[in-house]
Length: 198
Image (cartoon, rainbow, N blue to C red):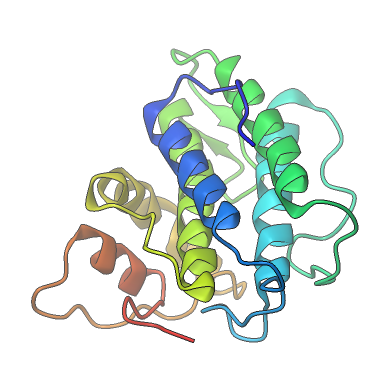
């Protein structure tokens, strides 16, 4: 299942594709598998990631946000998880497609709540990209987080992540290791072990 709705921003479209691919790779019965997000199953991470995409869309459009708290997902989902994700990605892509790239700033659900259009888009992509990795690792699938995608995501991560750590949105950064590529460097910066396995 894929959507025809793209945002027109390469980084965000690639991050959405990564999240879509990761969710598509979850095996039957795999929705309760543990993820790199301590205490969260694949379903928890999916709900959080979808809720965040809706949150970004709502900040841009003024429409309602998610009808649940993305930071306290239930871990239970009625219906098709892939359709649930697709609805969120479609909303996010459509909202970003309508953004004036020359605007001074756009509204975002993450501090500082106003960002330059590129940075806001990349923050949205960062969320999708890192949770794509979480779900893929839980599912035993290949990492969808490429070094090429990780580079722009690291740029925005350095803008926004430190204040969010205090809220518990990201764990403390892990020390870089020799041989890390751009994807591994990003994951460590976000408090994730690139070699995590279940």
